[in-house]
Length: 310
Image (cartoon, rainbow, N blue to C red; front, side):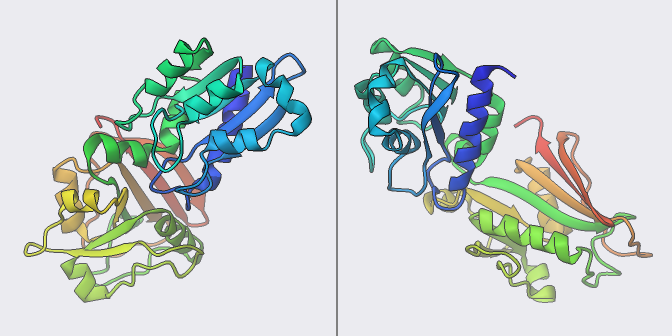
């Protein structure tokens, strides 16, 4: 791992602290260090809350008065391109130029229409040495919901289901407890991190799911129920600033998304110690689903897939 990657990894750690409150803004972390002094960090910060200071602002604010004169020797690491436009806060690129740092290392370019390389260009035009693309894959992955939302004008879509060891999602059409208490807690943690959750009419009428956060701390996602008379309107969700959507419906609802290629992530929980003789088969994974991560919790495994062709 290079020195630049080490500091960028710290930026990612900081950025993740804004997962709940930074929305609908992206998660961003920033670190200021002195390469010529054993890499001493003199400031760091992250975007805590939408409408408040960005990561760069908070990093500069954390610099002690006695270290301020050293900014001319410093390198600033930031996981996402500094903004160049006036929004709820002034442009961070202007602040970086004003502070006079020698070098800026950017994890990835911002796809938001108001930025898209303008912040990087502004820094370079001011004579600052700018490096772009350090841990780019990780930096983009952290804000994949934000990027998908602005690039495709729809929420980031997570398809999610639980199945028995032999591939059924229910027992002869009846609801079946497949998750363990621990994996149920993880499911509620996911709900707290996403903006909306959806099921189909049949699942809603048969199981009356609350779709709330009961086994985790945080806000419950917006609850959506769809059927042929009330189809999903992605454009409406976009205009409501819903950046992410969990689909937990039955097979028919899940397959309606799969057939259209309308998904970004699939999470499948399998109870390896549970089988039934018959029931509703779990959806078939598409050829474009590539394993992103696997985890085992007792008898239950959770496999996450990413969309290869997205």
